[in-house]
Structures are given as C-alpha cells and as structure tokens.
Length: 75
Image 1 (cartoon, rainbow, N blue to C red):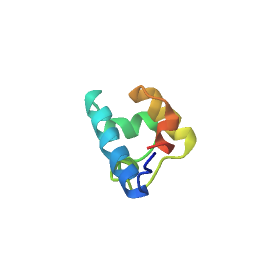
Image 2 (image 1 turned 90 degrees about the vertical axis):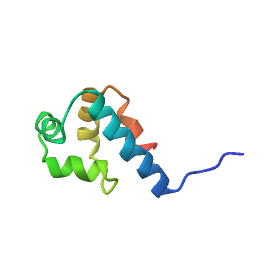
Image 3 (image 1 turned 180 degrees about the horizontal axis):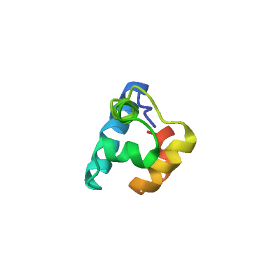
Image 4 (image 1 turned 180 degrees about the vertical axis):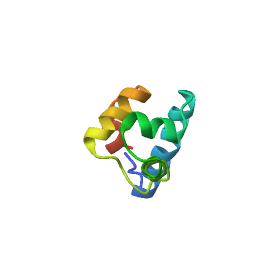
C-alpha cells in the first residue's frame, strides 16, 4: 500500500532539500538569486515552501544545484 504525503509534508521536504543542496554548493540565497536573475526574497519563498518556482526558473535551479528539475513538482 502506497501512502501519499500531504501537500504540507511535500513542501517541508522540498524546503529542506533546497536549503541543503544550496548550502552544499556553498551558495547564499543572494548568490543563487543573482545567478538565476530573481530576487533573494524569491529564493526565501521557495525555501520556506510558500512558493514553487516557474518551470523555466526551476530548470535553471536544477542546473545550478545538480538535480532533475521535475523534483520540484514531485516532492
């Protein structure tokens, strides 16, 4: 039997996952925002689980952090 996680659980997992990947790459929110052409508050919203980046930005995030961009929508 497969147990589906709630939206809140998925967002919490994504939140921590993004923070860990960014820090593992030695990037601050500000540096990552600059690389993506977005604002630092945008990064903060993704990492807090309040927002999900648009697909074109998710692809850039994935390239920078080294993961499959569709993970944003699976977590």
